[in-house]
Image 1 (cartoon, helix red, strand yellow):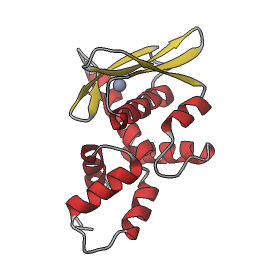
Image 2 (cartoon, rainbow, N blue to C red):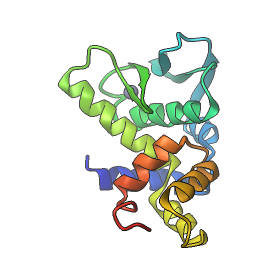
Image 3 (cartoon, helix red, strand yellow):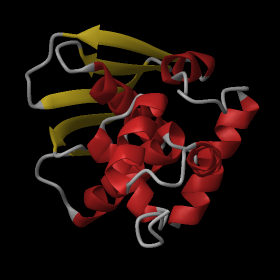
Image 4 (cartoon, rainbow, N blue to C red):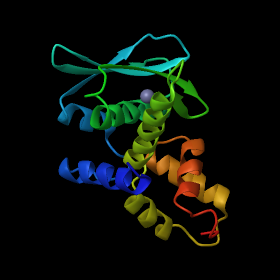
Amino acid sequence: MTTTNIDRLAEQLLINHDLLKAPVKISKLAKSLGIRVEMQDLDDEVSGFLVRKNNQDIVGVNINHPENRQRFTISHEIGHYMLHINQQSLFVDYYKGDKLFRKNSTRENYLMERQANQFAASLLMPKKLIAEEILKLPEVLDYEVKKCQISLKFKVSEQAMDFRLKALGYYDYGF
Ligand SMILES: [Zn+2]
């Protein structure tokens, strides 16, 4: 699945659930999808997991992590739910530099993790909403300031927003 398709799939999901608004209400989306979200006291290096058990999908989130990271974790697990849950029934995700990954990653796992990270970014920072927010900001502000303000609006880390803005090509054009 290409990056553009992931963007479209995430946006459509938000539209279907009437949640295409910043900040995206990610727990509400999980609930609407029938996923149970549980805050758990996990090892610090574990961000969260998705498990399908007895036909119930459960997302576990590290209760000790900052809220922005928890939001990203839930979004990442929704990515696994949308794209990969039929291939395997358990995903345990570790945290590293604002990306999630699985240990002992095979190439196939690596691709799934990359897709789930892209999906999470598309879900929390929809392309359309980012474009709208950028238009609202005074043009004179520099990239760092805009990035900071937009990340607050979307309730994501600055690092996640930086990655997303660059992926969408905003940095190159000095928006
Ligand atoms: Zn993952």
